[in-house]
Structure formats: C-alpha cells, structure tokens
Image 1 (spheres, rainbow, N blue to C red):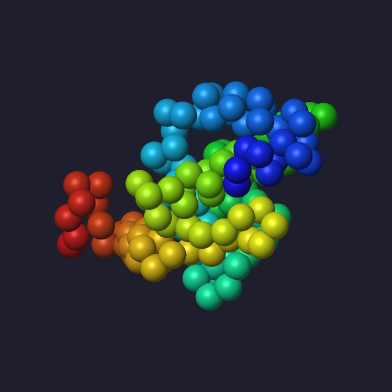
Image 2 (cartoon, one colour):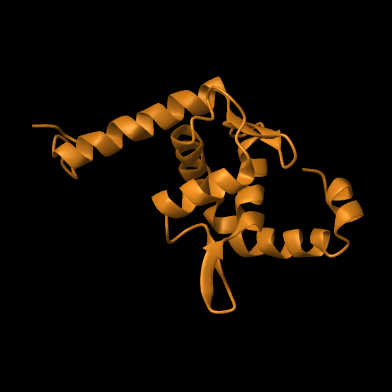
Length: 136
C-alpha cells in the first residue's frame, strides 16, 4: 500500500506507519513467515482474503504477535498486519500479493513456504521431529 494512497484517506496514517515500522523493524524476519502460514490457513492460495479474516486467523494462530490493546481489551492490530503483508509482497520475500481494498493471497513461493511450515508443525505435533532436527 502506498503512503500516498493512505494519506488521502487518513492524514495521520503515514506518520503512524513510519513509527510502527521503526518499532517492529527488527522482527520482520519472524512475522513474515508467520503471515504466510496465516494466509495458507485462510485458504488464500485459491482466492483473495480480506484483512479482517486474516486478522482473526493471525490472532488465533499466533495470539502473542498480531495484537494491540484498546481500552484494556486485546484486539487484532490491523496496522501491523497490513505492514507485514506489505513487506511480504516485496522482492526480498515474494510470499503475498494484494492490497487493503482487494484482499490478499499467497504467491506460489508463499504457498510452498507455508506448506513447509505446516509439514514441520505437524511433525513436531506427532513427535517425529526432535529439537535436534532429526526424526526417529
């Protein structure tokens, strides 16, 4: 999402996004793979998914990562989710395509990566993979 497009609707948005980016700059490496898996769980490999659905799935799958507090209540942080999705579209990652209005979907590379995450998570759940990385 371009800053110009955001600033037309919400004049405060560019500064807010800049501050949010600065705060989370060190954690992009861990949040982008998590977001690829969230998109996979939303079935975003077949069709675009709206950010509200992505936020709900992100909160369910990674409850400690994609939230903020509003009036003492824990709510999905749509701004953070939007920034992570925007980073996931960049050339460095290429895991997602889309925008705020039209929704988001996984790229082929993102789908392969998300399936790998699922395979590893299932292996850990079944006890087939030890922390050393070796199976039985």
